[in-house]
Length: 258
Image 1 (cartoon, rainbow, N blue to C red):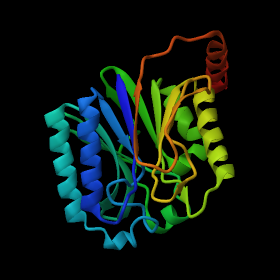
Image 2 (spheres, helix red, strand yellow):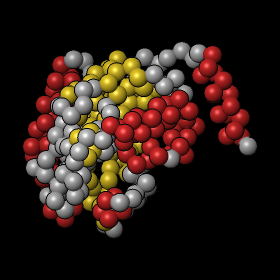
Image 3 (spheres, rainbow, N blue to C red):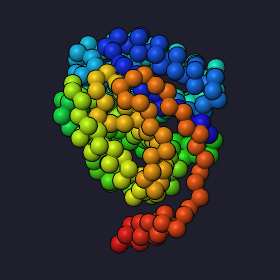
């Protein structure tokens, strides 16, 4: 199954973001990609970094763009995993939408809210972020959640085949040290859960988290160039369990029973 992760420069212009995502969906579909992932808040921008204020977001336009992307998903028979801000009766949600060619839309809402997240968002449980495409079980987590193994252990217990981490982790200046720290978190989450992990980040400023594919043993199989628009395509096949992975699974299961 071909998977695409798309990094691009988000602006506060929602329609411009939509056009970029649309172009990426069309290009990915032409290369037989089955599912395209975007970074956190890709459609709306992440407040206040890529959009001035959460209250300045035009949610009528957001919903119209989502409808257009839903139709595109149906027309091209491609799944889309889309970062956006959602309105809720009690506030705003930092959400990842799972848009299917069948016309269904599900949402996973970020739970680890701190800093700008805490200022702008609330958490409302809508979905566990575990979705199936052509028999491949995919688990979604968002940005700051990589700091906490517990969010990813949930995915292990549900036997996901791929972990996707959608980030908005960028800086005004280059920070290679932070980039290495975030990469080490991603590698650890893949190793400890014996699961392929794919990360996707934005390029509005300097990237401090990579867009890459990490195998269940922590080896980076693909990595996108930093700080430029790019669609990374990975042809996923379920890996065979090797000796080391078998040992980690044994002790994972043992410790979960304690």
